[in-house]
Image (cartoon, rainbow, N blue to C red; front, top):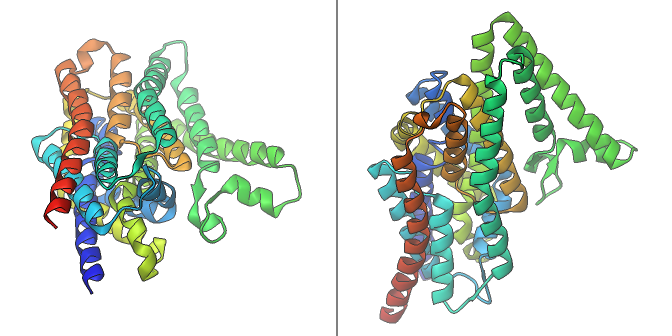
Length: 390
């Protein structure tokens, strides 16, 4: 009975964390560029991103969830008390960022909190996993911002026909989508992509199948957008923006749900709860957060960081989608605030420094670093204090 009560408390803390993430990171960032380009309203964006985030949590959330729950610390298994302390610490810090109007990096905060309670519990650092995480976190601003900058410059170039360049970018998105992994395409407990599913169904070399299916997806996406843009250029760009925002929102759910429910994973074995049920619960928390708290942060990202038009919004969302799916594939917790803000800044610089708020960016970077350090220190100290008292 006592263990069940503690699990309920941990589940409540996890739901609070899911709400905070939905209101701040996964709920606000995917459609912020589209809102900044006036392709969709703030309230409608918050509504749609919540639904797509729930779908992503259920269909793609397993990898990051297992990484957060089992791979950030070695030698010990997170206890119910450690899960409660870590989740509560991280959720409070993220919630403070939401209401203060600054996007706290959720991956930084949750990772710091889980590592902090794990070390206080007597565990050993998982250095190999930390190297993977650090490599991606450091690469995100340079890769995401750089690709966004280059894409925005390409779309602004007078020597490049926009009616051809934008469909070509849609083709790139089609290639990525063909290789994205989903739970419903793989065997029980595993994920597969359309490419691997087709490869398993036909008798042909996997490399040939991968190339053929990827090219088919690319051609279909490029052709559909080319027809749309040919009919009405502005409307076609707006449709592409909304599709990109939806893909990023789906990816956000697949990544961010693990930050909320990952610490619960070690507690589920005695109760035999299936991971899909837990992913659904976390996804519902993201949904509620998106509907109730995301509009504030959507406004902050779409207007305060950079004045984005349709071209720069497209340039920001494409690398965001690619990076998000890379993180989901390798099971690496990553902050969508870091991904989107870096891409927004990169695309904004394509129009000149005046389009980017430097002061806002400096404060945001300080909040990211501070959230990691603060979460680790506070969770370590809080768990040590609770453990001493209990």
